[in-house]
Picture 1 (cartoon, helix red, strand yellow):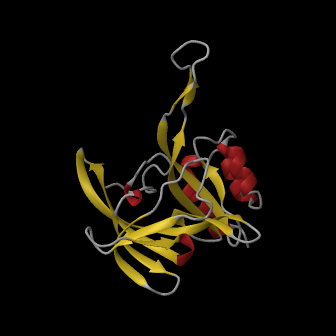
Picture 2: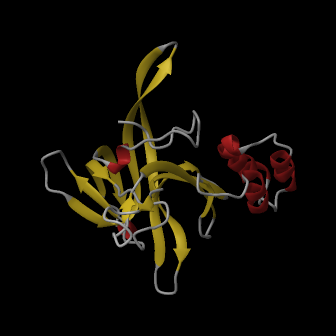
Length: 224
């Protein structure tokens, strides 16, 4: 199994899939219960969500009965993930503990839209990540001439999204392959209340590959 976001390496480009299949985990629920076993979370599409109804699947062991918990019931999940990293020409297996939490995507009058994401940085501004699926397929002419029914040819791929979130606010998507506006402009707008950080971003001292460092700089030097 691989890690979903190995932020110590290339933060945005690493693709991983383990938490979307059964993975060793410790699940802490909001009622105070702590469950140890295996868990998996749903992988959503880049352009849709489950309307705040994402569920955590949990079992104590491989052949045990599966239980489901609404995202609103979960406080956090500690996944134990393994991945291979090349060191001195050799692939070495490593293990990491990764924290996943429900993140506020959108506030509604009667409910809130939440999504499970990996916690990368926690602070006045927090940084989260998740892997999503994206369909870049197209409609193609069907067989049988001009009256043929078109056929949709799907081309599914997986990408990482990175989100930033200020305390008590909705999270905002800060980096993903589908975002057309340049990262420099987007990040400068989001961190506009920190002139010293904006200068570093606009001067390219900090780039999108430095997003973790950007958030940590803001938390240490800005935001009152």
